[in-house]
Image (tube, rainbow, N blue to C red; front, side, top):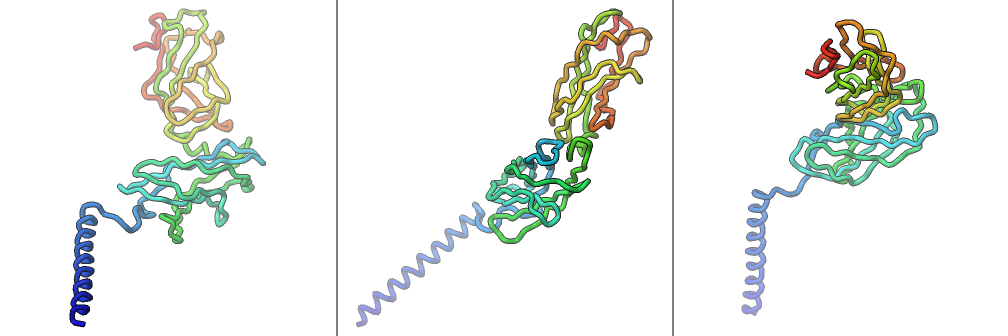
Amino acid sequence: MKKCMFIVVLIGCLFLITALAQAQVDKIIDRFLPRGGPEIRPEDLRIAQLEFSPDPVREGQRISFHITVVNDSRNSGIITLAVKDRDEVVTAVRDVRINPGENRIDFPETNYRLSRSDTCFTLEVAIDHTRRLTELTKEFCARRAGSGWTLADQGVSRLYVEDLTMNPDPVTPGQDIRFKVRLRNDGRPIRGDIRIQDKDQVVAQVEDVSIPRGYSDFQFPYTRRYTFQTLDHCFTVVVDIERTPYPVDAAKEFCAKPMGWTLRP
């Protein structure tokens, strides 16, 4: 009997020692390799950009939403995201992995129809399969234009002319001229007409072109209408979006010098 009790006590002591040892190991691991708990928090996330395609979207067209989520924490996590119009879920993606920094997320196509003159979207997020939903408060509003609803105008003010060249250069009076513009778009992808002007005179124009985010080169057709006549020929670039002209900021002034008429430095 005493021998049995001794064995039971001995086994209990072994279990206790093992449990204590495991607890110490877990503490060491947790100290150097933190684990457990939510990896990211709602306040770590912000929506840098929301767009849909096509843009503009016309009545009856299917829409695809695309967003850029910025994770300001050092951790990764799994989230579920929903695009909402007021209380209605427009489209959603589930179990998307979010890494530190910028993350682009493409939503599945939806038959959602925009019906009001202006529709504002918000994003709702659930982190790591929790039931607690958090709304990312920034709104993105689509406005109704002549050809449909668009989000594109929100980025129009962030267009810049990086370079303007012409061919031939130098040019002599009477020669056909072809211009090329390099634009930088720091906003949303847009479509529009691009024209080069000398004061109020339209020198060259391209119509209904796509202006993606980042740097793009646009080659203009040869023009015979424009001739260099005065000593002052300085060019500006204008982009028309939905028939609204937007002057584009230039990194420098582009003026042709009367030395064989050149834009070169």
